[in-house]
Amino acid sequence: MAPQQAQLPVPGEEAQAHSQQLIELIQGQIQQHNGQIPFRDFMQLALYAPGLGYYVAGSRKLGAEGDFVTAPEISPLFSHCLAHAIVPLLQGLPEANILEVGAGSGVMAAEILQYFTDQDQLPAHYYILELSGELRERQRQRIEQQVPECLSRVIWLDELPEKLSAVVLGNEVLDAMPVNLVSKHDGQWQECYVSWQEEGFRLQTGEVTDARLTARMTAIEEKYGEAFSEGYTTEINLVAEDWLKALASSLQQGYVLLIDYGFPCHEFYHPQRSTGTLMCHYRHHAHPDPFVYPGLQDITAHVDFSAMAEAAYAAGFKVEGYTN
Image (cartoon, helix red, strand yellow):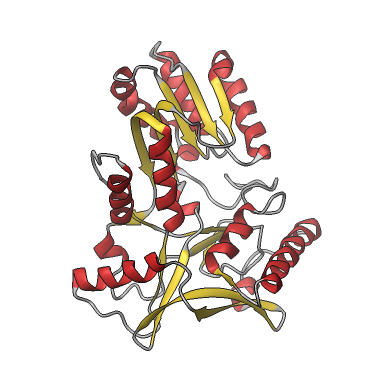
């Protein structure tokens, strides 16, 4: 047992069996790819493998019985402030639509719809892009219970629509997207891979799979004049950047509000942040080991908001603001 695992609550037999299924699936992928897969692929499977990944399986994730709590779960004030801020944005669109990406328990959607109901300013549609069937049902029940008159306006999506006019909301979405891990060894940037050794997953380094990774870290070193130390390890979220590009292609007119934990580039890649920002959450315990209880714990990484802004510009967006 890993030292970190020994400090965490022990899952029940059913949960352990579920995790073992996912472990065997990932092992199979590793075997098919010559004994290793990029960390990004491991994180993708751990979070989103059909029927087994953390976000698509049926375990409770939010609240006291789950693994973590988000701001909308604590108080309706967060959602009401957000709704108040987007009223003028909706009024400027040809059709007053909202698209929430990854709506969790549905509490934020219900509170936003409650606010608009009270203000007699309901949106035309409230779209929810949600991959988990279990979460969709929980969202539907929450909305039906709190604002039943709004349920007919809510439409669940499997993917981004081809064309959309809307205000897009993403609360703690970017940090749940799979990241590439890179590490510096012998003066060169290498990518981190996951292998299976001695009855456990292990990290090892190898050639970079995407030239954008090396180019990004080289550019950061040149921009800030810092040479990162031997073994410096960090994350680059190419998936989030590609997602913004896809969103720009879908969104004909509108606004995107992305709310998350993160930093601007010069803080994210600070020389003293030598082990990156990767963090896991299990039963309200936070720890840095992504290989503990695969499928039962959340795996996240903080967001490089400078990279998000640059990706947005490159995709055709205009960045209206950035604030804490």
